Image 1: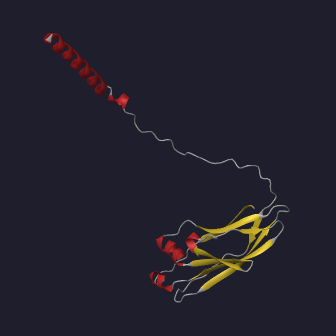
Image 2 (image 1 turned 45 degrees about the vertical axis):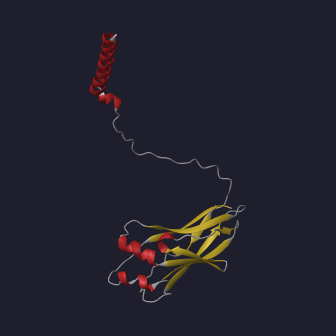
Image 3 (image 1 turned 90 degrees about the vertical axis):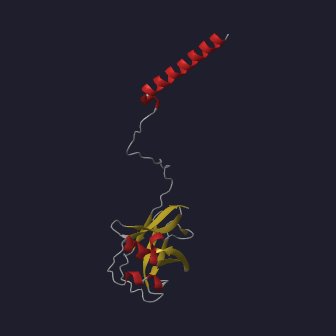
Length: 181
């Protein structure tokens, strides 16, 4: 019985070794290589628009060189928000988008300036210039016009010494977004 048991063990060990050697020899078939699929595009299909409303914003860009020596240094301009629709009100938000070409110092300058928006006599603190956003939305009724005062100001002059010896021009866009209310 020992002979048969030993022979069985040898056959099993030989079979396992054959499978392992075969697996190593064809290892490429067991391991996949990496492939890349470029230019993936994901999106959504918008629902059909059931509104005739369209927000039109008019006004001039703000151009100003900050001294930054005192708290409260402010520049502002007024923008007209007009809902050209005849039926639906629009919910409006305002934010900023940096233009290409800004470097770290220009980004830091935008992060050192604060913003506020006043609409309908209510002033909204909208955060730093580089991340400006209304804390709540504003509604513009169909056919209505509202005026928005956009302020950019120095809230903390102690943030400005790093810019003292630089001639910086940071560029960004004010974005007024609207959806059907």
